Amino acid sequence: MSEVYFFDFSGSGNVLEGIDRLLENCTRVREGRGEGIDFGRKRVAVKAHFGELGNYTHMRPAFVRHVVEHVKGKGGDPFATDTTTLYPEGARVTVEESLRTAAYNGFTEEGLGCPVSIADAPDGYNGVATAEGEIVDFVKVARAIAEADAIVVLSHVKGHVLTGIGGAIKNLAMGCTTKDCKREQHRAHGLVFYDEKCTGCGTCAAVCRFSVLEMVEGKPVWDFDRCFYCSTCRFSCESGAIGILKDGKERFQKGMAESAAGVMRVMEGKASVFLNFIFDVTPLCDCAAPAGMLVVQNVGILASRDPVAIDSASIDLIDSAEVFPSWGVTPPDILGKINQTDSWIHVREAERLGIGSRRYRLVRV
Image (tube, rainbow, N blue to C red):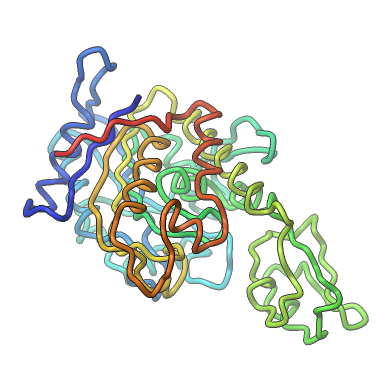
């Protein structure tokens, strides 16, 4: 059973002091529970999602800054980092765009008190590969993260259209990997064309930035060997002629768990700490602009060394929070119901792969 430390927003405690208490508890030596974590003289990756351009519910830069200050206070050498996106329609597909968007959203060296970098620079493909899984053919960890001495993963907990919830596991799987690894995960959900729904408008081919889709006799034809499975074509289709496999969400979640396990394998022997921030919980992820109306009241912040335990606690705490009435959903798995999937699929799979446990003990700080 893993400890998950909880700072409750319903109290009167200072949030920044709460982050300090979470980190102190999470990194200290506990009798019979392994060694403590020492950031001293270590190059520490502080991994956060910097938010899509136009998204206003992403991680607060002030929270990242405070974690950076804590790491520096322990003698560590932190840098804040994120990776480029697979999908092309946002403002983070290249390293240059990612840094501009990060700055626009408040993630700068001056504001965070440490260097800000894109971990898969210079081209989005720079990484360290590790073994394949049952769903994904390979996992490739962004190089700056793979070469760090330690990592602190900061995750804004929110919904996701494919996974139900997005927390620490998703931040590892997607946020810490290269474009080709992201593509490998999305390939798992596939693309399905419904000919009878197609109007032949050609929008799907027009929006394909990778030129893997063309119109032939009034119908789209994909070159799936080159397709990035970014779903830009799918989201652009107003007639609903493009979908994913019937079990696509399940396959994607399992592939994502394999990717997260690959990241943890590359980081094996290095200090890893996870903080989940349960506030501004939206139905969609921070890649969306906007990500939708809030689902539940703000809950608090969690910390753990176990990504499976912290995501399990996040799902449970969201289910126990007050849901805004307009959503008309009830527990269990509120975010899964909104996104028409089972959020626990990737959590269970990550546990099966050995990177953590769903059994946890919640400790209030």
